[in-house]
Amino acid sequence: MTTGWKMIITAVAGIDGLTEKLGRLLSGVNLLLVVSVCLVVLLRYWFNSGSIALQELAMYFHALIFLGASSYTLKQGSHVRVDVLYNRMNIRQRAWVNCLGTLFLLFPVCLFIGVMSFDYVSRSWEIMETSSDPGGLPLVYLLKSLILVFVATMLLQGVAEFLRSVLILSGKESPENG
Image (cartoon, rainbow, N blue to C red):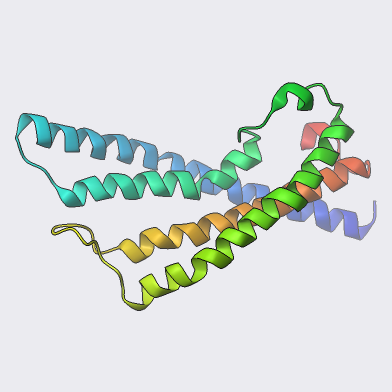
């Protein structure tokens, strides 16, 4: 195997490893989300009290899980897809579908989201945007930044998925490794 193919295999493994670590790290945020939502409910219905900051914190946790771990979901092959045809395809046909889907759907959509949200996020950072609700969290700019984290991690994992499919199509990687 040539050095070029080895570099591609190493790159795919490196990106997969990074995505795996991020996904496992963010899986712990699920517990924080559950606890924060339970506290919101307890405060509201048992103590007739509320906390805007706690409600917003639950929203931040949800956004972090959804936007931060989407690349992990992509790596695991767990995104929603129409499996009626895909499941009947052989590994090479699946690799073609994955290559084309990544090139013509994933990359353009991520780039569109990134371009369209960049100014939105930048303006939020410029003014260090805070919650418009009294008692809310002063970190709206960080929340909005998760959009760009989503774009970056999805593009990175998309590169790994594309390269993995190229390796399968070229016979350089067995399907079990992909």
